[in-house]
Image 1 (cartoon, rainbow, N blue to C red):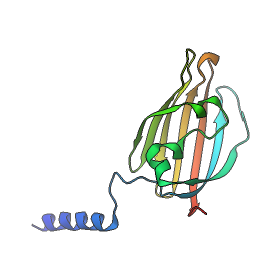
Image 2 (image 1 turned 120 degrees about the vertical axis):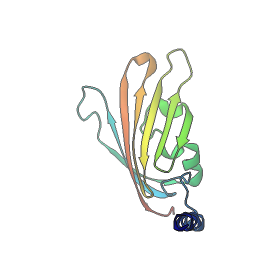
Image 3 (image 1 turned 90 degrees about the vertical axis):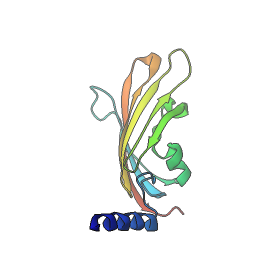
Image 4 (image 1 turned 120 degrees about the horizontal axis):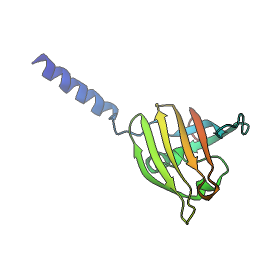
Length: 142
């Protein structure tokens, strides 16, 4: 009987705070994101890019919060099969055309930060590279 009351109390607490396993994480807001590009067999391919960006609830539900940030052709391609859980986000990218490029992304999420890698194949160029993003929440968007 105590177990039943304890379980009911947990459900009540989760409902009262609005938390559930399906809630998007991280929290929307202003994030500082460090972006690093790596190429196989090339050390320090480029200096890291650090930028501040506002992440909206729509960005979290659409996958745009974790999309390609570096300057490369894949940022104009379609984001597909986006899946978001409380602690992960995954998707793939597919570009149109005969020599289409693509990517697979996996991100680990917390309430105020995220870290992930987008592994890219540049299609006809027969080149692979990775974009790693590390973001941390600075506060609310201006």
